[in-house]
Amino acid sequence: MGFNSIGMGGGYLTAAAGFGVSARIFAAVVFSFAVSLTASAQPARSPAAGKSGGNVDAQAFVSRVASTDDLRNRQSLTLLAGSSGSTALQMAQDASIVLGGADDVRVLPIVGKGGPQNISDLLYLKGIDLAITQSDVLAALSRGELGGDIKSEQIAYIAKLCNEELHVVARGDIGDLGELTGRAVNFGEHGSGTQFSARRVFAALGIEVREVNLSHADAMERLQRGEISAHVFLGGKPTPDALVMERIEGLRLLPIAYPPSLEADYLPAKLTHADYPDLIGEGQSIDTVAVGAVLTVVNWPAKHERYQLSARFVEDLFGNLKGLREPARHAKWHEMNLPAPVPGIVQFGPAKAWLERVLTGARSKASATQSSSRQSELTSRSSGGEAEKRLR
Image (cartoon, rainbow, N blue to C red; front, side, top):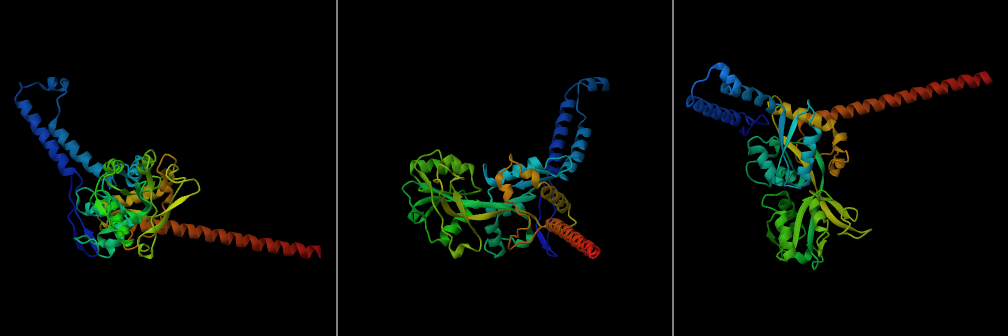
């Protein structure tokens, strides 16, 4: 893999990013060395015999790998998403499928933890180009609440993808969130987006629980055995995780209040019978809160190679929304609102330029249409006036 060396200068993140070239060339050199050892241990062959036997020209192989590897890296971006089964990972996979044309930038989805961990990995893990995180994480980053060396100006957002709803699934004997006080509640794995949001929401509501940190599968098992009282997770409704719970008796979704203390970073939301028919009665709904899923990128200088590649990705993504909203893709793509702002962080330059270009074109078209309509109206009035004069 390559490397990202982080440093701030002139308001930009300066970074040098190789993307897998060194590792692949090293592997090719090792292969070349192994081939040479094998060849030296065998009787010499004539050129004709070598061709007919299919021997590898090691030097040519190394050269070919180096040249093609560089080309492929100039056409590929990695996208760090969420855990297996998460909304973020499904949407990343959709992007990989839809943006797979010969002239498109190739998108390589990667399983991640989401939340603040994805921001850290975006900046400091080798070879990560894009990451999906949460709007509450970015808001906290802009207020300096995350600590560490990460600064909000080091990253930029491309677009808000959708909202993800907070789900609290509890045993049937739990009537509301308040009854979870002092009980064991799963907040997701350490460093996950669920853990980040759950901690903040429960703190805002004044509910203190015994936090445990388990994967979804482990949490479900312990919930059924009565070892924990509730399982909290983020996901775009209807999530596969909650749909699985519908087949388990004795579980229920708990409502989440929306006090003023949550208004800065969260949105009110509802889970309905249409979302979870076996967990929510017909005609009923459950209040909850939602947080934005945001596509982010390193805030490269404009002349950087990865900036140029990310700019191509923006063109591909924004220009293929129709394909991303086809029935086979995740339903949350229909929520993607390109002009929606993300407070506390700057928008990636090419994304902002694309929107300005499209909106300017739309305004110009609307203005031209209005002018044409006005001219038609004046012409009609003029013609009507002449006709009236003739009738007189």
